Amino acid sequence: MPVALITGASAGLGEEFARQLARRGADLVLVARSAESLDALAARLRDEHGVAVETLPADLVTDDGVQRVVARLSDGQDPIDLLVNNAGFGLPLQFADNDIEDEARHLRIHVEAPMRLMHAALGSMRGRGGRIINVASVAGFISRSTYSACKQWLIGFSRWANTEYAVDRVSVTALCPGFTHTSFHERMGLPKGEEGIPAIAWLDAENVVREGLRDAARGRAVSIPSLRYKAVVALTKVLPPSLTARAARRGRV
Image (cartoon, rainbow, N blue to C red):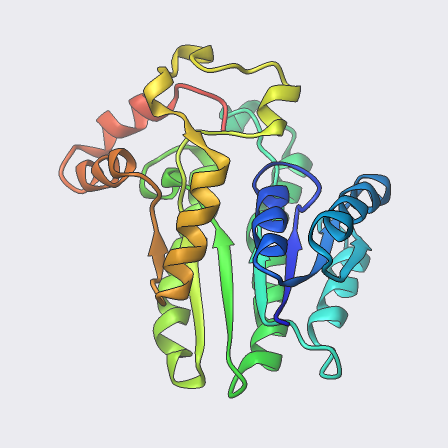
């Protein structure tokens, strides 16, 4: 059976990746900060799908947390076939008002941690084959504080790596959803339409993950779920950056 390692697996898109991959018969390594949440999810997936599920509690903002996951990705005796870089968190868009240490942690979990995990995964996958999915965002195509800048880096690096390592049978895909309803949003009390975001702009997590897995299987460097967000990204190429930046100030994540 293929083995998938998913960061940020205890909720949101990470949990949905775990569910869909388990349904397809993949064994899993689930990474998140909360051991309790991981253990509960692992037990459900084992019971429902009969797959092997390993839990790896780790905080990817810390050196120790990153190194623990790097070590697992580098294990040649039990190799990983699919890496899903999904862990992350959001900050208010007002960069100058945010605590700079929070911004540094934000940069680390969205850029440095995925870079280190990709490096470790490539060391194991090259020649053998494998897939990497980096959960980015349509925010990476517009100007939207440091969150946008981080996701822009992830998209650009994924595009390059997908071409560079195709010869080694490794694909790298940046998954770029728009506003997506997940359990994370529900716990924050953000139902459809909150914060000026119309209902039509929201995506379903199940569809986002399904399209991301499909595009990764096809070797695509960038996956943009839904026709409406494909249209949004197309518009960003012709509209003035100042206009897209003003529009992007709406919403939280």
